[in-house]
Length: 230
Figure (cartoon, rainbow, N blue to C red):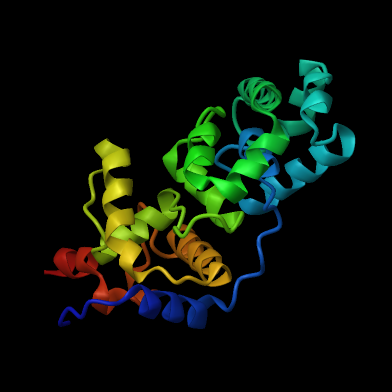
């Protein structure tokens, strides 16, 4: 099969034809996104949504509410969210403390007026690195980026957008972000949908192990697949 490089627009169009248009993200508030990521770990989206909903209903999403909840209660509420619930409860508490230290009104204002500075503040939260900060800024419609998580990044690197070296994740992330930057739309809903579609593709077909390449509409433009086939 001859290689034919795909543009980012081609990639997103083919994925949308495969999966259909994604629904708008359910959570777009910066702190709520951090809470959702802190409460669950390595579970599917349905479980993440259930944990987040229970936390919202039984505790609340205000930093003071989280800090005012005894740790055993937090642990019980978020237990469904994966392994090490005690550590996840500690992470939630630390996120709430950081939110009070920074000030959520201040953070939201900076996201609107100074995304670069806001990105640095977001990385003060536990578990939020450069990719996570970029995703929050993307969903806040403050920065043109794909906010690539591990699933998005794997798809992009296999297609040839950037250099792959999983032992140097930050370098790989920045390399990919630099390559895709000229192809990023100015339309935020399109960028968010692109993130969602690439993430879904990385979860369902372009998996880290046992990818289903024969079902992939991007195979002809995938350097990784064609190199493996050769």
